[in-house]
Length: 455
Image (cartoon, rainbow, N blue to C red; front, side, top):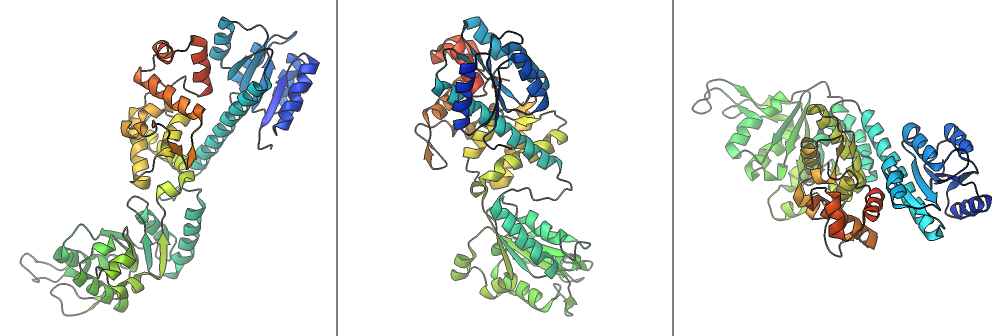
C-alpha cells in the first residue's frame, strides 16, 4: 500500500490527463488514470482509491455520476470535481452531493496539489481512526491497559517480567495515570491471580484507623472490639495487597509495615501472638520519593524493601499518541452504558483533546468523553460536546501546537469553528459575520470538516 495514498484521475482531454498524472506522481501518490467516466467506474469496482480527481463534463459518464457512485459504494473515497463550466449553483450542488472540493478550470497546479493533499490527509486520518476503532473492538476483558505508546509498552514488558516472580513492586505516577490498573495487571499475570486483590488508599485514614485496617485487632483490644477482626494483610492471603499513596503513611505505621514486609508476619492490635501472612506487596505514590526520603517523610529502608521493581508511569501529556485510542475506548464504554449510538469522534474534537495537557491524566480524559457522550445528540461526538473550558483553551492568539507555530490555515479553522459555535451553527449568519459569500463558506466548511458542527 502506498503510504502517500492512491489517486484516480479522470479527464477526457488526454494532454490535461497526462499533465495531472505527472504532477501527482511527483507528489508521491500512486496514480491511476482514466480518459473516460465509464472506464473509471470499472476501475473503482476493481481497486481501492483514497481520492478521485475527476472532470465534471465528459461524454459517456460525467463527474456527478462518479461522485454519486463513490458516495453510495465507496464512502471512504473523497471526490474532487474539476470543471470549465463553473457556476454558483453547480458549486453548491457538488458540495451538497458530497464532493470534497470544486475546482474551476483552467486549473492552477498549486491549488490542485493543495486540495488533493488535504483530501488525502482526511482519508488517511479516517482510516487511522477506523483502525483505532478496530483495535478497541478486538479488546476483550474488563482489565486491559489501552496503549500504542512505546514508553507504556516498555513498562508493560517490565510488568510482565516482574508479575510471576512474586517480588514487591513500586509504581510511581501522577494522579490519574492508572497506577491501580497496572497493579491489577501485575496481579492478573502473577501466580497469585486466583487469590484476592485488596487495595487501600493510605491517605484516607489516620494512623490508628490505618493500623486497624491493615493489621486488624483482637477481641477486647479497645472499647467496641467485641470480636476478632482480620486486617487487610490477612484478607489478602494468597493474593496481592495494593497500598496506594504509600508516602502518606505516618512514620510509626511505616515501621510496622517494614516489619510485615520483612518478616511476613504481623501483630493484630491488642494481640501477643504473631500471625503469618502470605501477600504480595505493590505500593504506589504520586510523590517524588527521593525528596520524601531526604526530608525524613519516608523511611529509606522501607523504600528499598518495596522498590524491587519500579514502574514510572508517564503523564498523558507525554503519551499524546494514546489520546485518540483511549478516546474511542471510552466512547465505546459509555455509548454502551448510556445506550447511545455514537460511532465517531470528529476530527475537531480530537484536535482539541490533542492540544489539551490533561492535568488529571487518563481519568480526566475518561470524564471528558463520558460527558461528551451524555451531551451528544447525533452519531458523532463533536467539538462543542466537550467542556467549554477545554475548548476555550484552543482559541488563543499566536498559540503553538506541540512546539511549532500554527499556520494561517490552522488559525482560520479555529476561528471559523468558534464563530460557528457562537452563532449556534447558523451558516447564513456565520457567512455574514466572516464577510464571506455562500460558496466560499461552503468550501471552507467542507474543507475543514465543519459542515455538521452545529448538530
